[in-house]
Amino acid sequence: MTVGMCDTFNALCCVYFGRWLIEGSPYVILIDVAFTAWSLDTWKSELWDLCDIGVPWFDREANDAVLFGFLTVWLLGEVCTQCDEPPHIVAHFHEWLAGLGLVLCRQRQLPVATVFTTHATLLGRYLCAGNVDFYNKLADFNVEKEAGDRQIYHRYCLERAAAHCAHVFTTVSQITAIEAEHLLKRKPDIVTPNGLNVKKFSAVHEFQNLHAQSKNRIQEFVRGHFYGHMDFNLDKCLFLFIAGRYEFSNKGADIFLEALARLNYLLRVNHSDVTVIAFFIMPARTNNFNVETLKGQAVRKQLWDTAQTVKERFGKKLYESLLVGQLPDVSKMLDKEDFTIMKRAIFATQRQCQPPVCTHNMLEDSSDPILNCVRRIGLFNSSSDRVKIIFHPEFLSSTSPLLPMDYEEFVRGCHLGVFPSYYEPWGYTPAECTVMGIPSISTNLSGFGCFMEEHIADPSAYGIYILDRRFRGVDESCNQLTSFLFQFCKQSRRQRIIQRNRTERLSDLLDWRYLGRYYISARHMALAKAFPDTFMYELQEPTSASGFRYPRPASVPPSPALSRHSSPHHSEAEDNDDERYDEDLEAEKDRVNIRQPYTLPFKNKSSAHGK
Image 1 (tube, rainbow, N blue to C red):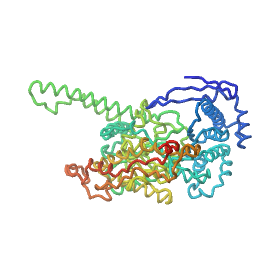
Image 2: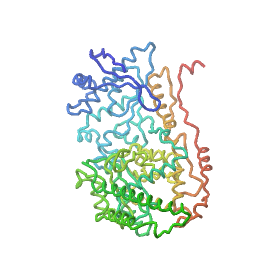
Image 3: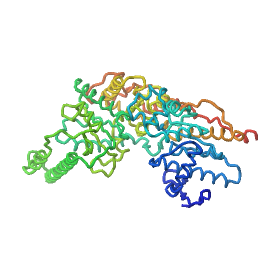
Image 4: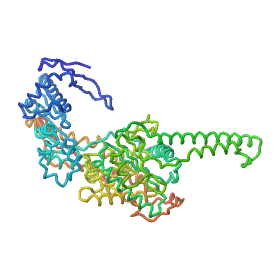
């Protein structure tokens, strides 16, 4: 750790230098903005004089952005002045909170190539939170008025100034690029999709085993939650989930609940033996766990302990009988005391009420959007329902007394992630499902969904279902989502295993080792614009699809609607029939169809002239 002296402002400025405790241990500089809070009024006045942007005193987040911006440009200026040779620095700024530093870099004419990335426009988030017809009216918004009405005009000005001052402006997806062009009035130069550290999630050939292990842990929770109403077969039970910020409409929780109600009807009228349990993992205001939910887990544990006690007594009698060379008399293996213990355990599982929908006590139960929607559609976890709902209004933790699993374990144990978002600039949740081999549903209004449509000829064959929310009405989209869910419920266990194998093979597509090239390209483009005498960049339209292109699998598709009729019962014939599917052959075909990596059209003029 080092502390630097801020000579420019004749004051101490705390700057900490060290390594980031993540894989690769990169160097990191931390600037303590609170240490220079006394300069806030001076810098806000300077911001007004330079840019005509006024920041109100009550907006603490914007005040921190001002402090961070001025400190950032001071730091970059110090680096530039202490270099022996003319520096070629690239500064990449993310989101409006960091954008002021970019604006000041250009205003002070520092020798710095600047890149600005917006992961979601500020105004776009606010507009979608207000339930407006966002995408159909995108070209018609009076952006200054809309920002002013929402009291974020100063923030919007900072974001827009950063977008226009940057040498290179990028967004994370094509759908966000369209949004940025209309709201920030500049078309992005390049799309830089978000990636994942796939190595962190990689389980190679073990991911199917990890799915089974995590699924067993979820099943244990379900046994406790539905005690007294376990009238369904857990082996025929599918676990679906939606997770993320509690934005009821933006995240698509509204359309998901409506589709679940329709799915429940279809499963009942078709006399399906499949039960669907849908988890909603969205943090909300609560005061504690639901007593009935905690009781369920206690009852389950008590039943398990009782079963272990009886098993030990039974085993001891069996051992004694075999030890003297006699076959046991089964009628005498369980005595009256054993039956009494078991009867008491059965009586303890009696339950007069329905299993709870919510696992916690909600502070605003009567106005909660999910609970109100559940009341409207009537999915109360009754015995006749084939679709059950569990609302867990808290992020998952391995230390929870209720569902002791972290998020990654939970995702691995589920069968399908459902993310029918209306506003999702990228979408890390379906991406995380993909690298863990779990199929998912996303939309063509999410960056992830658009990205996958570009790269995969038939996304659904790889377990990536793309819901059309851009060109269809809400009811049509809901019907399409219901169809996806119903077709998934009709898959056999083997078809789901095949689909998970295909899904997991898409991991390389989302790895930073592949997607990082777009960030490199953006920074090279910025160098060429900032230092045209030294660097050059051959302009061409680098699409996010250049590199990978997955064809449609040659084997029988996993959807029962398109494959041959199969027996409704698990049979030896189903296991022995390979359905023309060869996993190694499929993987090899995908590798052959992967294009060569995208080559950066970048040259250093000095090296080019030296040849």
